[in-house]
Length: 266
Image 1: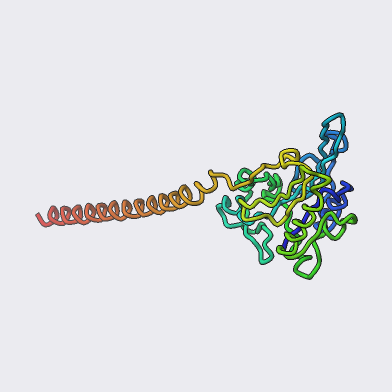
Image 2: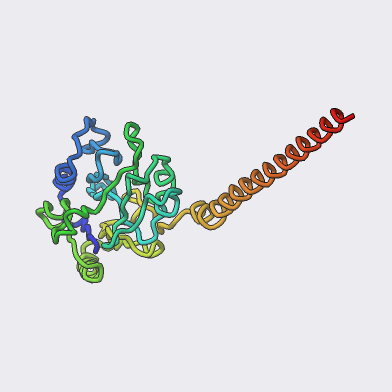
């Protein structure tokens, strides 16, 4: 399952953010204006989605660029690969979820996420982000943010249907927005939050060609397996050393007992 966000329909009302907080019982946070109408400037353990505002001035004209920020639920998720405790996985609907019973708050997911999404709560020491509302979609409902979106800038459905809708909408927008972009991240085996943007990704603070960092591949395929082998080797070496030392101690004890016995008999 996937979600389509169409920036051409978004009014930046922030109803999606409010609905997310309400459904997931996330508390409000005190914020300040950072630029123009922007109050939230980053995701937090208690804010899993919000609309970002960017102003672009060209040819003496100003254009608003809105984007819904949240976990992209990547097909090839860097956070999942970086997690050393198997706390992150894809659920049956394709959304990336965190098992808080396994999460230790190490922050590897925060450091390695392609889109810098997860956040570790300093009090609970657990990592948090958008879940895709599994408790809703598992019961046939749309995610809370999609359900509340009045201008239908958010659409939820089967991935193939969402991508077909995205392609059709993108083609229809191109005459009006020749620099529009269909952002689907094929290098990540797709993302379950596909974007229709009115400008190039860089205007929204997004990488042009998102991918899993090389460091994550190195960690998963080389360093982590090698580390496990090294740990196993160290344990084995320690065990062998212990056995040898114990054997020598036993031999010394046996020899000493014999010497004492000879002395008494003499």
